[in-house]
Length: 281
Length: 201
Image 1: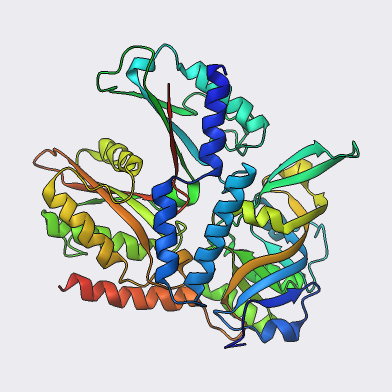
Image 2: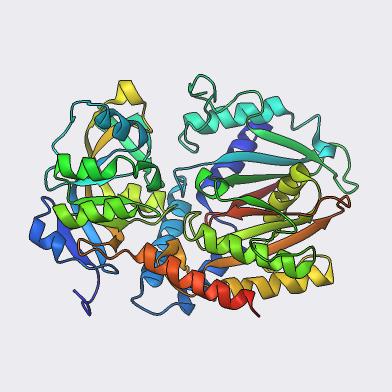
């Protein structure tokens, strides 16, 4: 199979099948909720939807989202932005992707989902892979969840959040309570502590590439991930905001150095339909 | 409806009595005609546009589906729905109370819920809000058994057009009823209290 067709396959698979860690977390959530509750009805619907989409190859959610390709730098020549763009156009024509790319000035749709800056393609450190070999990871993130992402600047007097890990904790819990079910809960949080505004959003989103349950590299953050997951799930927001024990499926945190004057806490909210998949080339 | 086993079956046309009997928290399965309508449609009606279909005793679905035109086994071109989950409803808050009053719609389907003005209009006119599961686009597409037509396609494009869906067993949960109860308001209040407690730890 040629490269473009393999990339089309990656798009189709990503759009129709959730990663195993996300599915396992959804199944565990379904077992945890009371039978007959709204939470249980919502999670059953989600699981049935995933099984069906995976079987038929249809998009599991109609908002096929912002397409972000993370490509090992060792594949820079082989997996070019042009090759990716061509695959995206073919996948759109075949109904694996919605016509989802709009010019913000004219309001016109780019019907093949190709434009300057779309899809998003980033070449990342390959970790020593030989040229022509490596991994392509696709992350699809819908607009409903993207609209819920947010950034705090510490100290925040209104929240009573200071410039320490406890302040970070208050920001994250505040975000989860404010977001309610609007981002299609149960969600997954990518959190960046520190950095500047731009890298904060970038690094927070990158944390969504990490499977649920794989803890952060720094001990203090790994501990905070566990604590925040447990505490957020006592808020009672529940699946789709109808109440219940499962508000979040996971919390993934990372940190970046900050300058003395700034202390940002950035939260990338991902819906339960966390579509990510990796192709080895 | 409390204590019933399985979802409450609702079939078009949705009578006022059946709709007023629903309570927040009831699981429902909707069958019959459902029309989609989202941002451009609401603005168009508010600006004095002509109602393209009759919503009386009907259902309005906040949805921008993935629909493709394809040849069936008989060689005829027809619409095929690939994915049809709900979109966020809050954007229609400014329009919905008037729309409910004007159209006679009985069920509004979407996600995330709507504001207190919409809740009041639902109480007054006998209408409920059904929360569909955001992201469950494939399952909802399968519950669409037929695309009976489409309105305003050229004007609004496929994602914003008014699709005429004939559905069977479309699943959701009544989240705002016609007695003035909203699960969203209750959950927001409860979670705010829980957050206060966590902050003081």
